Length: 451
Ligand SMILES: Nc1nc2c(ncn2[C@@H]2O[C@H](COP(=O)(O)OP(=O)(O)OP(=O)(O)O)[C@@H](O)[C@H]2O)c(=O)[nH]1
Ligand SMILES: [Mg+2]
Image (tube, rainbow, N blue to C red; front, side, top):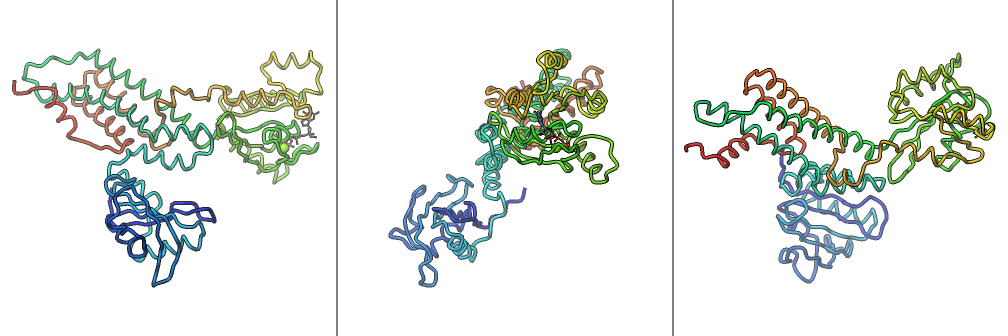
């Protein structure tokens, strides 16, 4: 990764009016660049690290703003370089003016460049750097917690543990390959196969956390699906607690799907109201129905709504395109049924609700999170939270499975060693550590070869 050593500057707080705004400058010339426009009792260049000083930003003899400047000296700063933070009055005009003055001596930072430098200077790991982005974007309690844990380095620790198991096995293999003639203990194939299978199981657990991690970050997608007029939009509105969707007794009211976000037990949930599914000649409705199917396919869970008619056909059609385990069956308009009748539906696995009487909706809402909720322990251990990480772990698991096959078929340890190397590289990619000499170092550290 290219490390440009220019000094960079950017506004670190959101653009807009606020109490204060912060402009951050990082790099070899950070202190010098700020001191050119900053006047205070004690000279900035002589200020000790981690100290703040009050002063004035002055340009060509004119006062721009009164500010507080905080100084961090390398390597004890966020980026690992000299960093100066200017807290000025939170006006867009003042902030931009100060930034413009700084840009005479520095360059505008690229998005994420401060964090990128922190990573390149080994201040934080790659997964932690990614977590910074997640932390900033966290919209709910759980996504915030997940990002925080990742930021603490939990995921990196978890991956490093797996990596060290793989590298122990690689050491054994490399020794066997390189020092065949020497009198070393032979490899116990079945023990190694077992160890590798354990690692695959661990990686599979991790992949599963990734699926959940994505849900935590991007939201759980839930779609309301069914025939026209069964009350999908009414349930949608009840979930949102507002009259967001148009509700009428006319079948085919919802044409295009609607998406809204709610927070449920700390989870971000994206709810989709879709056009009622039916055969129609109406061109616009047809497009709407096609879109309904697109949404259904992308949903984590589908709420299939009926209002009495069991719609066997539609349920069958639906279960062909979504895993039936993802379908939650709902009978709406319970107010129109007798208790005995309702019992029949309950027996058939329907959740019962009525948007008019406001019954059954809380239960329905909580059922959305069934099999989704991530335990506190899991969060503590660190979870995968983006597709880059998931793809890399899948790749690693695939390589280890290949290693198992090559051992089982006794193709030769070179093949196994190669597959394990691939697995290590994939995992090292996640934490941003690509090494090659590690293994050799480990051999010489643990063994005295010449003996
Ligand atoms: N009795 C009764 N009527 C309801 C209930 N929920 C919805 N309705 C009525 O059913 C009709 C259709 O409701 P919508 O929410 O528009 O139904 P939809 O499934 O979105 O319909 P489309 O958008 O046409 O597919 C409206 O007249 C609602 O007032 C309920 O719990 N009980
Ligand atoms: Mg509707």
